[in-house]
Amino acid sequence: MKSKLKTPTVPARDVKAEMLELARERGAQTETDLIRAGFTKEQIETHAPGVAEQLRAEEFATAA
Image 1 (cartoon, helix red, strand yellow):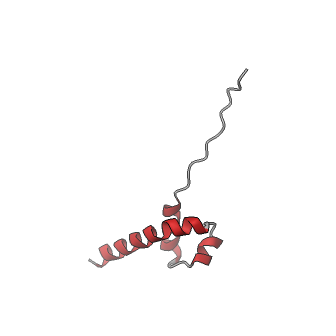
Image 2 (cartoon, helix red, strand yellow):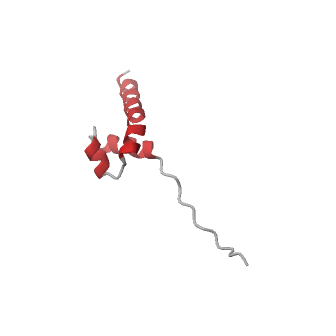
Image 3 (cartoon, helix red, strand yellow):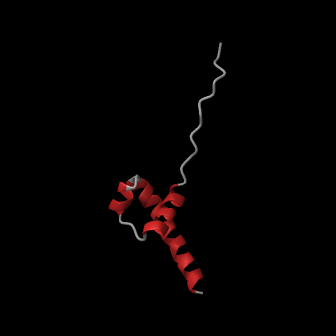
């Protein structure tokens, strides 16, 4: 008989959003800072360019 208990699902992390939030709170972050904050090198390489672009867009919108 199969168990009716379901394995709880863990929501996927939104790494880009987490990195963006960290940058907003603490300012520019080095790779070492991001690793200490719990991100992997792969996550940093994948998401940092998008985070930087988002931050530039926000700064541009604020300046306009």
